[in-house]
Picture 1 (tube, rainbow, N blue to C red):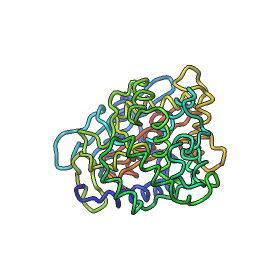
Picture 2 (cartoon, helix red, strand yellow):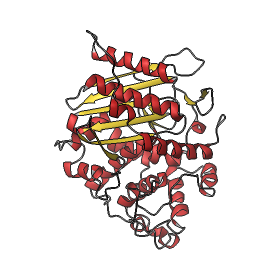
Picture 3 (tube, one colour):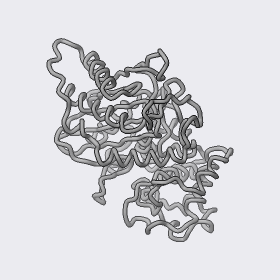
Length: 387
């Protein structure tokens, strides 16, 4: 892709995630003092906050949203679609969510578990009985839950796999076949540790989990996500890969360089279950409200209360549930659920605070530290405004 090698990009994505993990919630812990707000309406206050934050951190565009459990959603986006261009972003434009996709993939799989199409204890050998002889014996008993909780035995993917990534870039088969091939390639080698023994963050685990669903349903992850999640939630702006209108930007150097939206401006599409969804923040807020209400035990949602507990619980005290980091924050009055994501050209972050009946989202159309700090600052400003 223009100016970026995606193998290095995947490594940068992991480094950025680790940077965020070490520093997450700086703004969200402290909040930003905005002074007197006078008689301005909430949407005007949000726009002012986003404008000031974008200018402070020098990102091309910045989007933010606040959602309350009563159904209130306030969202906006400021800035430009492309550095050097004149077209402004709008609140309806889609932003790339990166690894925030993981919670969506886990939610779709939970729907299948409720219908007994899969079980949390389904092993990879059970999902792929015809591949058993090709799977390493120590991987055969790794379960769907192991892959979603990053306890599968797959290695830390700090660096892209030197064998699998070049192979993956050459594949032209349908996504189901590509992900099936990934399962075979990934799990034919010895695990890095015994499955279930410890947590090691691995994007590939979500690809394997998605492939398990594809194998037992005969439908692609993309089809399943649309049918099981996006359509029921009326998330009309959702797509896969790079958003079609708003450009991502490489901000790894001194200048912020726009990257034309194309299949090459994202990680290979076979990896999308780990981080390949884009949508508007208004639609993302629909997903946030689903999990906010689910964390509060509300009945009549897309999933049962006990299923939401499975998605949100952290039985190993590892700080990670299924697609969510689990942390404590004073502003949240206890537990908060969060995640961030980046493909190096975008950055997105979500926070849920069940005890405050609130969710906060932010996204920028560039990657790197500038984007992290802009989104974190935006979250802090929204907490100050709306809590």
